Amino acid sequence: MKILAIEREVAPEHEQAPSPLLTEEARRVWELQTSGVIREIYFRRDRSAAVLMLECAGVDEATTILATLPLVRAGLIQFEIIPLSAYTGFSRLFAGERYPSDD
Image 1 (cartoon, rainbow, N blue to C red):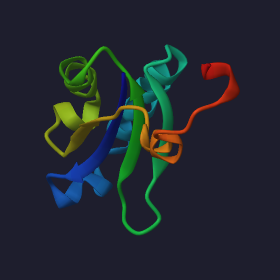
Image 2 (cartoon, rainbow, N blue to C red; image 1 turned 180 degrees about the horizontal axis):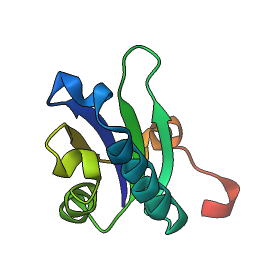
Image 3 (cartoon, helix red, strand yellow; image 1 turned 30 degrees about the horizontal axis):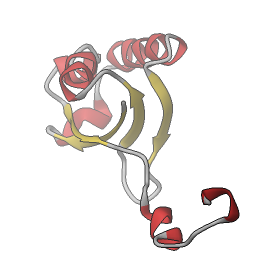
């Protein structure tokens, strides 16, 4: 399942977190990305926050995995976790239409 995770600041001082903690954070993110759990990761351009696209069994697994991030463990950030599904809206374009192969 695809999960969108949007960082929310808990403690405004997280940007001034000690360098070793930020290095640990980058290392853990790298581990999760190379294992295929984090599929994409971005920084927002409008404010300081990360946006992650995860591949997990569900919200519970995503929550457990994100809890392993050093900044989360330190209580400096948390994530809004949003489960996603495939867009099915295109089916409305073809509702009720018949095709020669349908006969």
